[in-house]
Amino acid sequence: MALLARRARRSLATTKKLAATAVAVELAIPAHFRCPISLDLMRDPVTAPTGITYDRESIEAWLDTGRAAVCPVTHAPLRRDELVPNHATRRVIQDWCVANRSRGVERIPTPKIPVTPVQASELLFEVAESARAGDAGAAARCAAAVARVRALARESERNRRCFASIGTGRVLAAALESLAAAGSALVEDVLAALVRMAPLDEEAARILSSPKSLGSLVAVAENGSLAGRLNAVLAIKEVVSSSDGACTGLCGKADEIVDALVKIIKAPICPQATKAAMVAAYHLARSDERVAARVATAGIVPLLIEALVDADKSVAEKALALLDAVLSSEEGRASARGHALTVPLLVKKMFRVSDLATELAISAMWRLGKSAGGDDGTVTRCLVEALRAGAFQKLLLLLQVGCRDATKEKTTELLRMLNKHKGAGECVDSMDFRGLNRLS
Image (tube, rainbow, N blue to C red; front, top):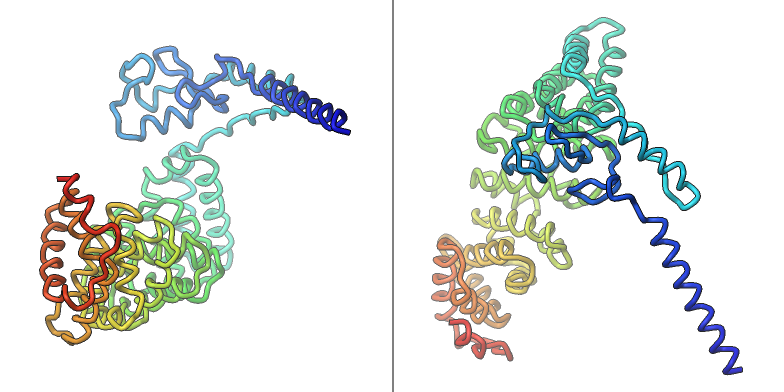
């Protein structure tokens, strides 16, 4: 019996080795079929004037990173418009894929012809004209043109850049304004195409901040389809994060926008929508203390505390940033001081998530420790809770490790606040001060 078991194990090991060898053979891609940047099989080979062939996606991503516009291999100057499709290499790669189909290699598709600026301009002209027209067939023409714009922009990043470069965001924003004023059902379709053009320029954001457009965005964010609600939140984020200021040109719609954003955070539809809503609410709360108070009274603080319990890095940073912005108002501080988990979670997030999260947690703690205009009893309770949670030791550690000047000032002031209550029940654990001297 033992002999049979050993033979079975040996046979299984041999089978695994053969399978691994077969996989290695299957994935043995010829070197001249690989992109010099990604080292993957080229799907859309293009050749630079230097004679080096790259995969289009990889070389365009290289040129988009802000590095010097040079060929990665030869370091010669290189512009995007100098890249030429290498049809011969693509056909050879496709033939190789077909020859190795039995080994699981799929044939790469033939790249579609990219849209030209002239074709994109014609589509935008049709969108603008049909959105303004009031005849019976205008809605159908507008829907068809918008669908075509969206399909082409989604087809490739090259097409999306082409549309963005000729002002598609402004045209679609103006079309959205016209359709919203007419009460058209095409608002969600235009919105879906519009968010493909993000980030929007200042002019497009200004058009979207009109009363009709904002009202339509809020309505879709609250009562639209799931995809429509996501797109509406993304568009609102573009408006409130524009360089003109979050509250400039909101035409008295700030309260409605806040309610819509809090509704998205309270009843999430997808992680992307939740993150976008947090970012938009952050810009609103940071720009004006009255809006920060409005966000707090909408019940955002308990939602953020709940989200922080098991949040990943991205959500935690956004939730902490929004919480810090809301705590600039007395209403926000009162709500946070009244929640039992606020202080323990802020202390826990220090050194646990990222440097940014640590700075935001300290800033929020600093705001909670300020007693100006608040109840000294609740402020004292928050400081004592922070001491018991180990905030004093973590703040000392941060000063020795180093941080930005603004964070250092808040940390120093917060240590002074905590030191006044140091005898009220500080809980010193094994991490107290033993490692501090080694860092100095």
